[in-house]
Image: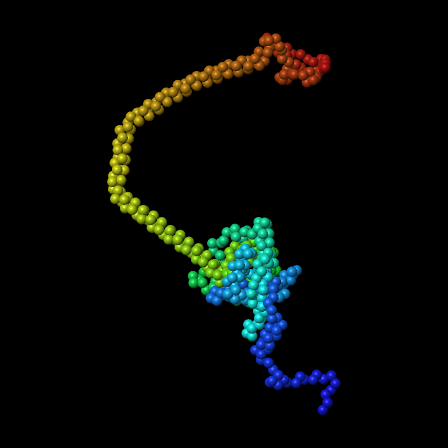
Length: 453
């Protein structure tokens, strides 16, 4: 039966002799690499995640390379320095460069390429060139630190007063991070049952968007800063190369100038990012951050207990002093009362002895006062009567001078019409009968002619 044109032909099933196990494939890769790269090579790379095994003395690390423009990782491979070489290489490198053998240094190392069937590809370090100086990561960190110090913001967050009761916590982390779960378990199950109130502000904690994500979370917290006491930035473990976002200038300056104390737990004990440096308090892990917050509550509780004990002691002392005073007062009360009664009795006797003389003196003073008042009254009455007499004489004389008789005696006459004094010529008509009074009599007349001015 023929196949139709264009129909997909199925691949033939390989036989057992044609298949490879994973171990066999890895062996071939190892042999191929050994044949293709048999020599040693001087390689430029940046060290990351440097760690030393305390028991064996071997040093394990990662070599990374970044894009100069974007800073993105473009290559990464595991490395190892066996204890025999590391014991000589490390002090030699540190003595020549003046730098600690640590993550973030660009190095020039002599390596051999190895491939292990179980652990995969790695570079075995045989030598190092100490003239190849500090790498881009460390130099960039130093430049950022210097810039923050010159701008005067490097220690701003550290200078903020730490709250006595850091109960309201704003948390910046990934909600799926194991470190977040550890932190919450440690915080909520504290032995003293301290009440903590926390709110999660989700953020990416690794990758290219970490910087922008954490800054956005800080901005959200800033809008509600009155609701929180502290900010916690936590992150679980991981490679040192994943912490490069926390060496960002923009993120560091946001943290340094944030108005609430920031506590970090974003790395391991051997790692120290710039955000750690500018934060108020730097701790190793999320659980260490939780323990720190609990310890601050313990300190506050201890202070309260000390104050309570001091109040109890002072109250007891005061009560004892008052009790002793009352006992003393009770013992002395009868004699105090008797002394007081005797003093009052003596005062009364003295007052009774002085009373007649005081009454007599008071009466004499009153009598003298009354005499003075009587004399003043007599003088005032005489003066008033004399003034009234003079006033009456003046009034009598004025009345006499204003009387018609007085005026007539002075040579004047009064003309009257119908018993009323005539004051103006206009009041008269021709034919009116007038009476003219003189001092010694009167004359009657008739108006014949009237002339007016």
